[in-house]
Structures are given as C-alpha cells and as structure tokens.
Length: 217
Image (cartoon, rainbow, N blue to C red):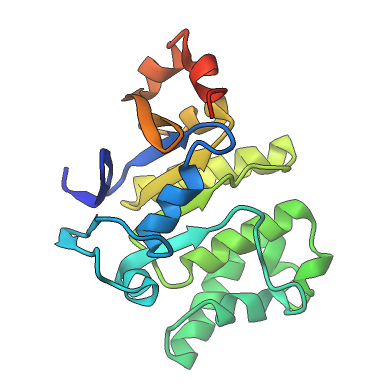
C-alpha cells in the first residue's frame, strides 16, 4: 500500500488505522503537530515532499485534525462550528454541514445549540464532524477518548473503523493502548519522541512489556 503520510519511521496508508501509543510526554502530540506543520520536520504527504508547505496548504491537501481537549467554539452553535471549519464554497459548505448533522444524530438533534451547552461526548462528536467537513483523506486524532463515557467511546471507535473501511487513513494518538489497539491495524509506542516498539495489533496486545513501555513517557 502507498503511504499517505510518512514522517520518520511513522507511516499510514489509505484504509489503515495506526495507533500512536505512549504516556504523557511521549511525543504523540508533537508528532501530530509536525505532520500538520505547527512544528518543523521532514514529511512526505500524499506521495510528495510536504516539508516546506504551510499548515493551510497541508490541510487543503486533505488532512483532518481532532485536537486533544476538543477545542470547539463554545459561543457558536453546532452548525456554526461546522461551517466555520470548512473552506468549501458557501452552498457546498451548507450541504456538507447537513451531511455531518445526519451522520451524527446527537448533533442533528441540536443544530442550533451553543457548543458550550453540549455534553463532553457531544463536543467530541462535534470536533470529529468539524474535522470531516473538508472530506479529508488523512485523519489525525489526539486522545479522542479522554474523559468520555464507555458508550460514547464505543460509538467513536466504531465510526473510526467505518471511516477506515471507506478508505480513510487514520493516525490515532492514545494513552489507552487497549482501546486504540481494538481498532488499529498496527501501532507504534513512543517514548521521549522516539519509537521504541512497533507491531501489528495482535503483536502489541500480546507484548508483556507494553504496559512498562507505555509508562515510560
């Protein structure tokens, strides 16, 4: 498979979920920010050298990003959050927002609700819906399950699996290795910005040293 993103020893191909594992300070967020262009680093994106591209240029090529802590616009409505995140022409932006509201029923029921009034799970779905507004080929997620109820987590992971099945490449940064590996095809464990273990889902899940590696930071 042709990798859609390659940075160091990390790569993700179309239709693949790669779990980026590690504790606090392991370097997961830094790696995602380097892919996005917030930090400097050599990168191949969609088969081309993207090292010199700006954040806006990288996003326009097909990157969606769900940051840690959700970071929705609290004073805006659900629909306004969706439309504000898109660079599509106005009419197409409205149609795409309708598609997202249909895809996420918990948002579709409250399109005019201010984002700060939503539950944590609803805010996380809004953050995901915003990331999908521009129809990305590569989706980056930073600790998306943090603080969510088990049912919401299960729904989120099911959606990620469906997106990958549709051809999207997904890089999922998580501290909760068991959750990430339940949907990932393979994973990498980071410690202090370095990859210390790689393997398939089954290989990492069976690794007796995984818990110690995750605690290494």
